[in-house]
Image (cartoon, rainbow, N blue to C red):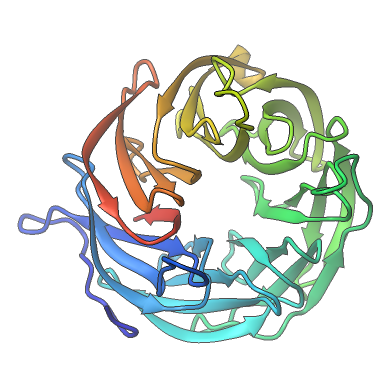
Length: 362
């Protein structure tokens, strides 16, 4: 264990085959982690290996700067923060932290120009924007957008719950997915770091949207709905930032066991735009969808078993492997992606790691 720089790997050359890997965790409660796990992944076989830990409070989601020189982590807690770290030779070192101006930040992104970090405060239902300094550290917030409203689920939708914030492929608009209000909010970001709301897209009431992912052609987005056990295809206008959601469709090939409710989590799109993957928590699998009609439709192909409570799934930069962060199993697992069919095959040995909630392979 370490709280400073951890040499976890380097760019591949004739001698070094592995690549860096960072793991987001929870650091509160029994069996919790200590911070950001630092390790490697093997591009040949997909094996994950842990090396050390950098001490950060509840770093449940991570985002890499476009330069890949800096990493940003939410501190998901009351009085939320965002922590900035340097990335060097596969290791990490904390630069500084700034307030997220809200509670329970669960997601963050870096603008494509690398000038700002935005974070979604789940408990407060707001989005904060923080300027990036020359050294990669964060300045104090320049703006905060507060969502309002509620949904029909009295336990989960009593108020706004911003769960994600991310830019479209052009960077002209950033979108915040709010589980509590059944809404995706579209914003522009000014050069002064101010947010301007330009559009609100409503999904059917009670769906509880969690995360979305854009098709690489920029014409469609796919919304994973935590409360509705569904995914929605939305058309997207890059010129205006307007999303138009379609009808929900299931993420399961069969009903979960009696008494088990399924909550879709992360959603990712393959780089070639041919497949979409969704993590199913409760059913504990990864849904594989084939993309049709140029991005306008999804066909459910399979549910591949993963660990318990797969909070996050992600593809490596080459698209050869999918990694699943199984929070309740305390494992991160690897799956080879069949490029022709999109289907997943388990490979390697599960990496034991406390409360993993995100894997970020470089």
